[in-house]
Length: 122
Length: 108
Image (cartoon, rainbow over all chains, first blue to last red; front, side):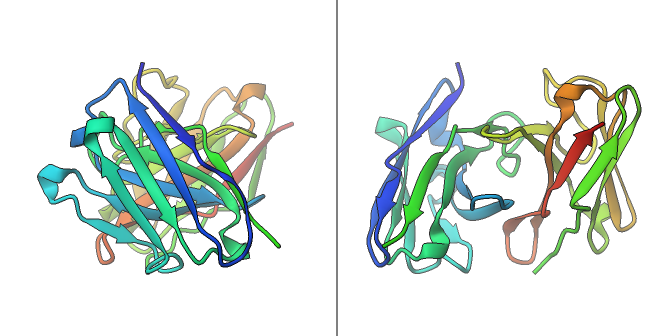
């Protein structure tokens, strides 16, 4: 079964750090470009960032609101995606989804995890 | 950056046809994706390449793209189609994906 399972969410104070994980199974994770997408309570979807496959350089790219604070990495041997979040702000409060392109190309998000909630509050 | 505009809400009676629009500058030059998100669940891919359906998505869901507007059409609407719908494109200038604000479909 093709699956993504996020973990690591929780409550953190402003200025704090948190590391999210996304365990993949059932597809060729090492060939997939993976992204993180977040959704603040009652709001729409917002792309956070992306990491390409090692074949395509393994480079990362980030949305402006999180650039220089968040870092995406991957461990293909453990088929896991990570999101390191530093200097967290209250506006980072959201459900964080990992997602990727599996069947229809790197730019088509056809596989999603169930999401993990991150709450930034004092 | 590229902006996608969706109506906040659309209402439709069961059995009728719902059309959800997604506006963007020359959007017909881009490949549009549509996602369905039910409360408390992750988004699900409905349409890719503007009009193709992934396997398992009913034929009632279709997509089109012309000029400055892409449209998701849901035929023979069912109560279970109540959800939020998001369009998305890839902004070639920034090389980032862009989502529309989402449309809440209400089945009356």
